[in-house]
Image (cartoon, rainbow, N blue to C red; front, top):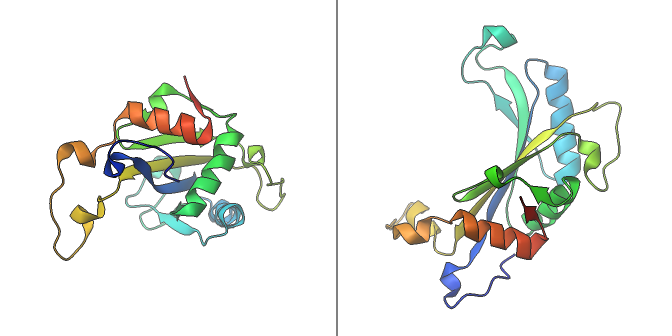
Length: 174
């Protein structure tokens, strides 16, 4: 995951997590299909997305299941990202890259290599969010002996993310 070479290995960026989200709206049948798809795709148990407030225009009440998501960390995240980048032809928009993260969408899950259409699931799209960090980021997040990080170490600039994605996955940012 960390193939980048710099003078200081603590400055090398790495993938913190990949979050794949499928929003389904008010229909519970679609939410179950979304969970099944995410479990099929990642091999991990998907969680339900629950609404925090009501939206009468969309027939959504507070506490209703409105989607599913899964968070992938470690080596599995890089393998999953290769498949997901392949689904968008290894191209993402410039506006998809922000400080510390990268986000893109996949219109139909059948674009992902190795996954076939399932009539029980139907046709669903998904959002993919990738968070980046550097070694030592845990120092400010840990419960015991938490400490501060310099600002330059806590942020990963857009240009570094573009270089990392191009070098590691062969993705073109345009």
